[in-house]
Structure formats: structure tokens, C-alpha cells
Length: 341
Image 1: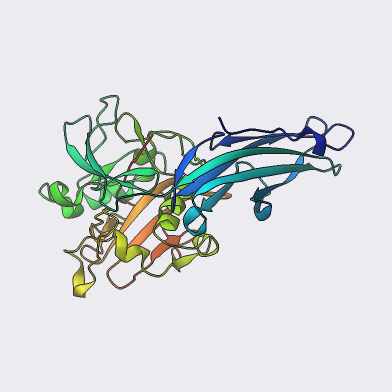
Image 2: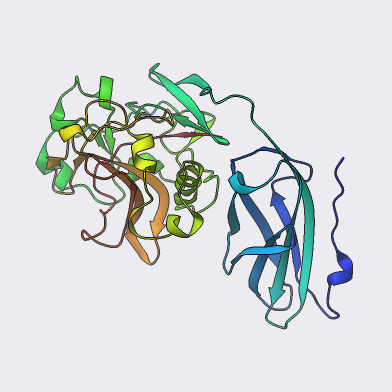
């Protein structure tokens, strides 16, 4: 067993905060190149936490100033062997507490994609693929029922979609064609994708939503884990708009995208240009783009949620929010991809 230390000697006198690394676990084995979510629980009984510093092998690599205290560690540039993760929580009285664990990075012997399948309530079977530490659906969701068997309302005309409120659950087929979901999946508004759950920034999100049992709707942070696994830098992953170099190309399928905008699909994600439905019920972008929901609302604007976009004319991945200049409200119809618990 690798050694674990609470590092009590580093506590200041007085009422120091508490902190603990909750993920990964001490002694965790990690494949070289994986994106690791370092999660910390920190609290202060007589004040507030002002900052949590993340340190790997005696080098400060990041910090977090608000709950959830998390950092995404790209292990691609590290050596195989034991590494020390240390976190330090500071409170508003300048007291601090640290916690350390050891993890073991191993080299992966094979580059062959690991794949599988999952079934939804309707009996549809979806291909799945392991990308880094995450298992993703390699097809868009097309279920007509929530995982408890309750039917999702199907909307088949523009007026009815336009009349939906932000809390009304609904799905549709692009141009109301019942043949499209067999290839491109269905389009869900955010209320249906979430199935009544509250916004989540956690990694993993812990929101099953419309996804099959043992699977869940990804948070914004889980999309970032995927993007970094495909090569995007930590700094670029937190930018707005089109980010990255060829991560979108790695996610796009080798066919169906307009104007030779196909991808290499080296990730196995197999994204297709399913298009969207607007808040007014209008369809657009089939062949050109696809959008995927996350569980994460835009801060202080509860009618908006983060999403991911891939386009025929962009090699990167779009991260959009805030307004129509950047993204779309919750009453749009987007595709859904689920992640394994």
C-alpha cells in the first residue's frame, strides 16, 4: 500500500480548516495520458475557505477558489511511476491544512479502442467507447422514455415547441422525421435531458437525467475532461468560443458532414451532424453541426446551460453560453450523449 499522510505538522496554530483529497484514492493506478479529476473537500468551522492549492511532485499546478474544489490533471507529460498529490486549504484567518496522497502512473500497452454496448429503457442498443478514464456513448440518445419508464412528451410542430416553458420536458425528431433517430438520435430540451434534476458542476455530474441506468448526463467539467484527453490544454479548455486544435476532428465521424468537414474519428466518439431545434421550433444545421447538453447552468442565468458544439468547418470544439452570440437557452433541442457512472 502506498503511504498516505495528513501532514498535520503543516497546520498553523488556532482553528485551522479541514481538507481531504476525495478523488483519486490513495494508491490509485492511472494510465499515462489519462485526465485525472482531483477533487477536494475543504471546510472551516469559524470562517471560510479562501483558496485550495493543488501541488504535484512539489510543484504548484493549480488552485480553486470555490466549491467544488477540483483540478483536472493531464498526466500525458509525466513519467511512469509514483507521484505525490498534495492539496492545501487556506482560510480567511491565514490558517491552512494540507493533505497528501500517492498515485501510480502506468504505461498503456495497447492503442486499440476499448468498446462495448448499453441498452436504454426502450431496448435500443448503443455502441460505447472508452476515452481515457471515461466511457461515452458512441451514438446519440434516442429513447422515448425516462429510465423509470415514464414517457417523454413528443413535440411534432413548431407552435407547440415554441410554447414550451423552461421546465417543460420534451423531445422531437429533426424535421419531425421518424426515420432520422435511427442514425442521428432525438433532440431533447434541457428539462428532458435533466429529467428534473438541479444544475451540477461536479465531475462526475451525479445526474442520471434521461440516461439509462448506471449512466449519467455529463457536466461541463466532464466535457473538459474529454477535451483534454484528446489533447486540449488546461488553459485553452476554459476559454469561450472555438477552442483547441483538432479535438473536434478526432470526435467527428468519417462521414455525413457537409463540404468535406468530416473527422478522423480517432477517438471513437463518432459524432454526426444531427442539427438542432430552436426555441421557436425551427430546425437548422443538419449536415453542418451538432450540439450536446451538459448538466451545468450558466452562472446567474438559469434559462441558459452550457453545451458543446462541433461543426463541419471547425477542427476544434465550441464552448458557448450567455446569449445567442455564444450559445442557446434551455428550450432549444440538442443531442444527448451519456457517460458511464
